[in-house]
Length: 95
Image (cartoon, rainbow, N blue to C red; front, side):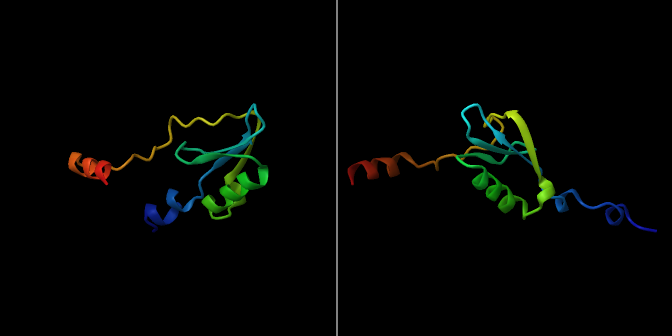
């Protein structure tokens, strides 16, 4: 008898799904299904290269979207600037 973990593949083994399409300005948009990764590209080849790199070159992970496909960054994590102490900031201003 198999354990549940042996009978079904782990979700971490499945490649991420990326949606690829063009926005209203003709740029290529890439966004993963969870909305955490993606970008805006000037060409289709660059967009697909990004997807292949991020997905480990799993072609089944690419879904082409027809019609206008706009990049929505509201769900993406934003990089935050490092927090500095006040004395560190003053030291940089003096230098």
